[in-house]
Image (tube, rainbow, N blue to C red; front, side):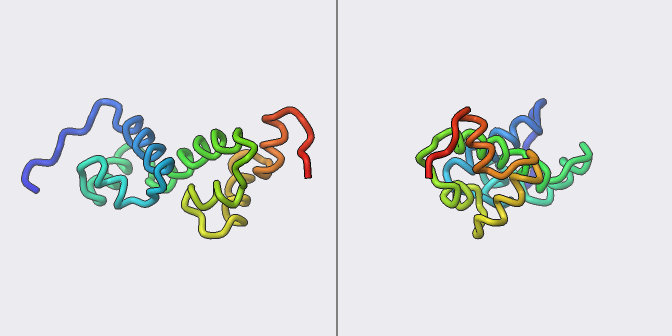
Length: 119
């Protein structure tokens, strides 16, 4: 592509914002991120490595931030949140969320609402 685009000063912030926007619109994956940023996948991975980070690490952090927002809406099913965040199996999302926060998504939702969950 000739000249590569200059990386913004807050490169990681730009990546995180783009990842979150992509997750909210149902686009998950390295390809959708690099297309949105106008750089190649290898360039992104190299720039992250220079900063001691990985795409997977930033994706996990973005998923957690978006998951917390989505869990605040009590009408959204956890299975729907899992799919929106790119998990094909809601159990994988539950395991990841528990690894990130120490609690399952349903428990987090209960705590965020401050009231017992209705069954």
